[in-house]
Length: 116
Image (cartoon, rainbow, N blue to C red):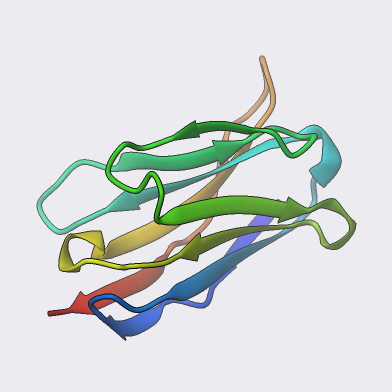
């Protein structure tokens, strides 16, 4: 199983970025998907999750109204569109895939840096 995150980089405050996570080795359409992030010296925190059918199931208050999670089951890919970004959004962003009573898979992460 592979979850390959990409699209991270450096963006100015107020800017936008879209990160992607392409999966292989799983039946993507059966899995819930999510994005978490971890800033230096902090615990990993949930950003947003989306169900197998595309229903957004959870989104952090800190990103509500600015970030949107979506998925393309045909491409086995989940996306995180990040708008109106803030320096506090700086973190390594990880994607995850899981099904109930199944294994939880994690990707390797992509660095997102927001400059002030």
